[in-house]
Length: 382
Image 1 (cartoon, helix red, strand yellow):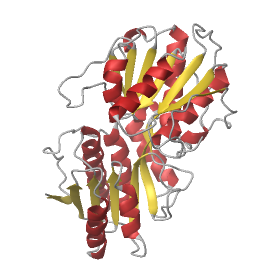
Image 2 (spheres, rainbow, N blue to C red):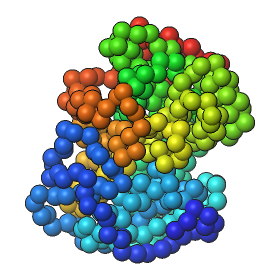
Image 3 (tube, helix red, strand yellow):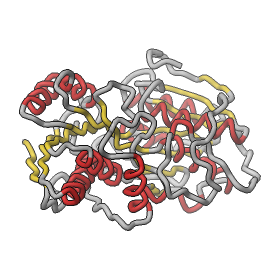
């Protein structure tokens, strides 16, 4: 499959063999140590359970960017791994263009294909799913990173055949903020495409992590915060990032589509680094230090297993589940570990504190609310 395909993809295949699991856990057990590599994760159950076979196909509907890289790629890997492990068929569809009508068409085609489950992700897919989910109650939907809503966000409805999974972005942001300061950087920035709740959670979690690390080191840090206000402001972002790096900013967290590449481009040759969000962005460029990551592959496998184990959504139908460090759902990528002063062993200790709720990160979703950070000077730009 390539991202360049322009027509709707309807490729039915048995998922290819997944790599060995990087985390071996029972159906209900969760390891305390962070997941090493989400891309290699395969759900490993201690006791064999007969799964529902009312439908043997799981469909994934990708957005226009396709499944070569990014969150959709991680989810598609997870769907394939689940299908391969438990004897289902994975089927891929893709919206043919960047429009509500195209996304609705892709979702309806997947739902009408005979699939028992249709998986999708993101705010724009959530808008398309708002009406599609009611077309056929016998088809179930699994939506990541959003809840079904109208285009103008005035109405939300999650039908009983739909379940939503949201991540604790504030915890992922906290880990990245803590890591970058321990690794020796104290002049930082955060840029988000728009002040959407998930982006704000990344920012406020990042600030809390920076503050905790600065306190532990006995230093003061600073963070420039900027919500661009658009997903498509490439030149403006690149110019401002160049100004930030030129003024001594050592690391910038980039959240939201359309900001990562601009930050990478501006960082070239400056000695500054970039922190990604959502997925492991370290393969994008050597200037990407780390990512505040969501473990999409492992979480979609967990959700699909629970659905087919019970033969339906049960109490999760019509509702939203938020996953966090206690389920190993967020973290930093460990395969391309590029930090030197902050070691993976130290990371495991910090992660365990999050996992066990020893460390608590305040969840703030409104850009007008900032956490208390006595060790960090925060400058929010207009």
